[in-house]
Image (cartoon, rainbow, N blue to C red; front, side):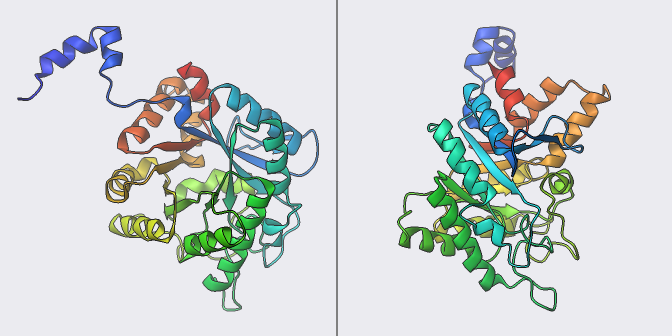
Length: 324
């Protein structure tokens, strides 16, 4: 027998009961806070396109990670910013690279905080693509897999609790899982960017990470925004290859994909509430068009309601504070 709508209205009118029958929970424990890390000391460089988010030197990243953890946020996701780039993206797998140094420093200071690391080459290559580029301008998938595996191993050696390949190369989850297992890191989870769409919502991130492609675009390896069946297939493939968590990116235009991926894989699902989604709310709130707190919490609740177990969001600290 269906639950009468009038009864639900009566429950909504009673504050405590309304909270008790709420179908979707949003808590700080569901959030991951991304950090942009650069070399140097005592520096916080504001990112113009992302108000409230800075590029951080390692000492400030340690401080920021600690403040996030104190709010109940269980994990951070690290992105490295470098000035010295080359065709092979060698800074990504340098054991003394910025992410590796930051991982050690954060884990030393906050051992209970989960440190996830982005595994990709785009922020380290002189051309800005996510893999090694052939003379004809195409990305060499197989050569790239070797370098991604080297990157994941380097991050795991530095103490990363999980690695998150965001490159969208074919077979990269299997390559990382095989190499991690072979080199004594069988316990390191892979958080796979399984359905990463070729989206217009990455613009502010590319300013933040200085990772825009110098030529062409990433549509040959990122996904067509029109395709949801393909997204499910990609997630299932990553699951078969050994992914521990599958991710959908961006979040808001792809909530249907989040739901389908959760239903089909049964794995923990992460959704990345990306830079463009963050900056839209910031801009609208600054213009007085909406209430930032209400809009952020509604947005994050909607992502959770669609099926995301983990929400990666630049709003994490603000949201965690509001939820307290």
